[in-house]
Image (spheres, rainbow, N blue to C red):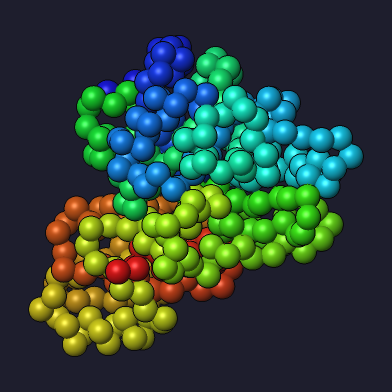
Length: 335
């Protein structure tokens, strides 16, 4: 059910129901993070593995202390204070100690918890009206392409789910995730709009690449992930995806496999590629990374709906969102 009624959405969340709502990154599938039965509905609805923790959303920085343990003059407190100016925005901070009010199921049994203050007027109004910590993974079936419009959410879950319609999201990729702790450097667990360099500058020290950026082979089913976005196969359409390092190799492949029905996903216009049985989609005429990020998931979903044999994607060129874009594409192409 598509709606713009924030008051009704808030009532549903407070009564333990699941509600989809927009953020600036992607649409989220929200439920009360203090209510274990409500959180269980998220996992069931998405088909999400129980070892994949959820991100807690709140409407303002001041409310964060209600959901995490912060000690005065601690290293974690200092790091948090230096990162605050990046909120509201597409940044998730993983704190080492959650408050007891956050149910264990929301964090997959971990003591740590990821928190975000989104920068979307509908999301913030909803969170303020609800006055609860709202756990909200992306509003899509587990491992499938994330939703950047209300229709994408409806395509996944049908009309039974209450969906707040806020139009197309402005960022288009999930939030950056950084983990802070008392002992040791901060770690980047997921690339996003806010880059590693910006986090290092804010903290006054180097933010290291976390273990998830190298993948997690052999351990995905056995232990809780540190944060969302760590599974090797993620953001993935049903149609097989193949990644090409350059446009020349992609063009050669299309020419040699002309009998295959193929979706071509390019990051800029430049030299066009044509194939007899190919459908071409360009994410940005100029190759602008922000425009590419905003359009990536919608293009993947559209090509997936065409029942093609294969989706071919060129590697993005270096730029401000290279790490975030290549992370999503490599996971989409994982077999």
